[in-house]
Image 1 (cartoon, rainbow, N blue to C red):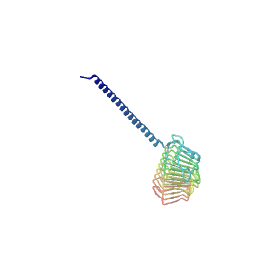
Image 2: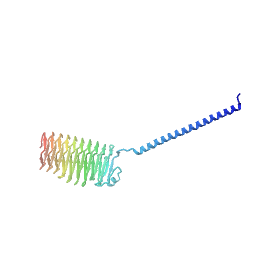
Image 3: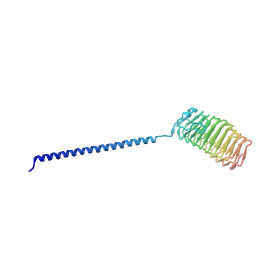
Image 4: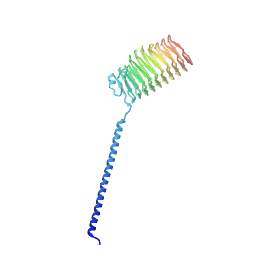
Length: 321
């Protein structure tokens, strides 16, 4: 026979066990959810932290720069994007910039700077005026720059004396004026070495008026320019030397000297220019030796040129008059 009192006790104990089980299950579930939430939160925080660290390690940078105008030593000292100290042994260096002239301005102006400055690996283009405009700044190196599609000269250098400017390993092409134009420079030094000066709308290199300077133009490729490959006007002195250049395919003379005495033209390849290979006009005491000249209107054309020293040249086609 069923004991009702015992049955009631048993049923109460059973209910209590179920309640305890449900309660324990709820606690375990809450603990699990809390652990998962903490784990997920840590993952999110760690990911955000990693992304922030990554952003700090790899800042966004650009080599593009607006046109530059440096008009004094103070301007150069204050210019941020440079290294060095401006001395002969530790020159200031501006490098690795891309400068779009934007259809106006000279892209890079340097004026009245006597500190030592090297400009290298720049890309200069799309100026309404000059690529480089340089005035009264004698201690300058232009190295391995690309200068193209400017509406006037690629490099224009005005009025400097003393010191020395070095233009080496540059590509100067498709400018609407001269490739390189040196205007009115005095007793100074200049080296134009190993440049590609191609397809400019003026002369490849134009030197205007100097007396007593030391200028060496050597190892350049000067071709397909609309006027002369090289043109010297009133550039006198034994310090002028044009050596080992390839001067080809220019639409006027390969090399033209006008009122320029005591120049040396040695070891050049002067070929396939539309007019004369060399024209020496009212220029005296010029040394022309060891050059190769071929397939031009005349190899060498002398006009009122006295005391020219011409020897050991190879001339194919019409030789000289």
